[in-house]
Image (cartoon, rainbow, N blue to C red):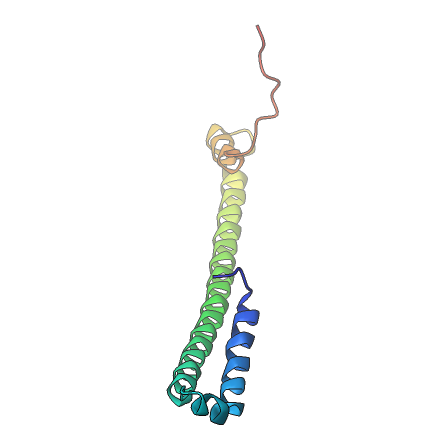
Length: 118
């Protein structure tokens, strides 16, 4: 099957349906009744249209779910940061527990230390 875009494939099917309808008498006279093929192609195209609609709905739902996940994570992160600020206020900036908690935020970031070379 040629590497055609989805819209080109859809257009091809639609155009062939019209051509078969417009030339039904000619094709029937030559021994091919296109009625069943027209019905089949119309059904297949309608099924493809329905599937595309479901695909668009799923994509929108995925974007909504991603936004919700990010928004709720932002709330949790903000609450977590506020808790760290509270603990810092209670224990002081130099307290070892506070220093360890603040390291958590930096895990996963590349180290700014210069590598030791021998």
